[in-house]
Length: 276
Image (cartoon, rainbow, N blue to C red; front, side, top):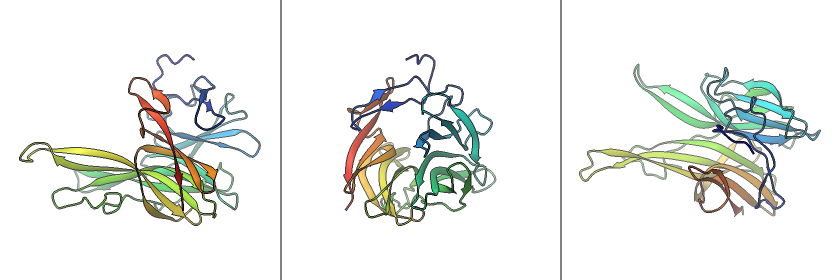
């Protein structure tokens, strides 16, 4: 397909087994989805497809969440508008939508929280927030965060007086367990300085992206259960039955998967986890 002069685009792949994927479309609506990189699709009861996505920079409502609908998931896309903006006006991104047992909807996303430390400095924290909906179209934003980065948990107790860790939790992927609970796989990004020379007068920031997991009884309140022991980002989870799940994530294994950027060699990789 023609991909000239396009840095980012949404594409449609299909697979019969979840392992071998075939490209089925040109970039989806190049006007509505121009420069969109963070999106997820949901099949509606009538068989259509609704895509929830982060509105990219350069648009009127950049940093908010919008949606578009298509009757066949390929063409005829219509922009449904901005679903909501963050309470404090800061960016929200990476929506993940699940349907609860009562047929209501919950959306999870990364949200920036800006803390003004003084008149000249500010700190940006990124946590996982949520919104609820009765129909998947009209949404009410929850003020509190669902998950927040913890220095002594995702930071893995590396915090010392000399080395302060800062981190974020983003990109939740969510699926239902066989016993009715919910499983979330999310990305924890930690940044901590290390010595850049012999006498440690220069510090170099080291960034680590790792996949972690949490569970929930109701899909609303979450309890962290630990690290998957894998580096990666932006997980999507598919149930295989009997509490086995296929996880798709970016930059986990650079030797397998779907090549998404031939220049920088970014891949979508997959692996299976079992929850006991």
